Image 1 (cartoon, rainbow, N blue to C red):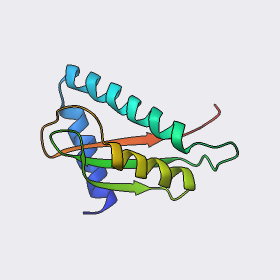
Image 2 (cartoon, rainbow, N blue to C red; image 1 turned 135 degrees about the horizontal axis):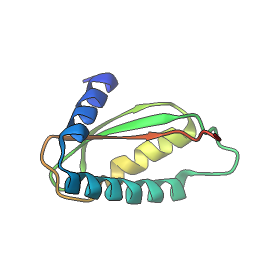
Image 3 (cartoon, one colour; image 1 turned 180 degrees about the horizontal axis):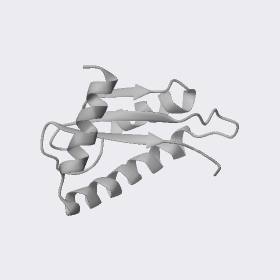
Image 4 (cartoon, rainbow, N blue to C red; image 1 turned 180 degrees about the vertical axis):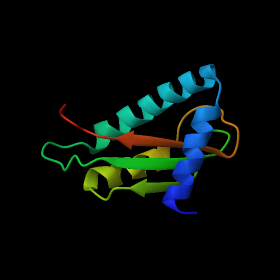
Length: 105
């Protein structure tokens, strides 16, 4: 499966989930991303936008993942998210994406 196919599945999945599930997803994504950024971010890193798509197992561990963006930060965050997953109980297959952009506007 390509990145674009996985991203389309994530977008469709996220659009169709119930409000309380979306709330839990956003909270869990935030916690996982916060941990990844604490481990990965360093002063002076290339802050180009990137996206990570995850296919989650029912327990939140990662079955498969994709990334668009090849900066060291993108690679590190991807690896961290792949290792930690997104804590929660999810229907399977559960596709979700995390898009990061560091615009100054």
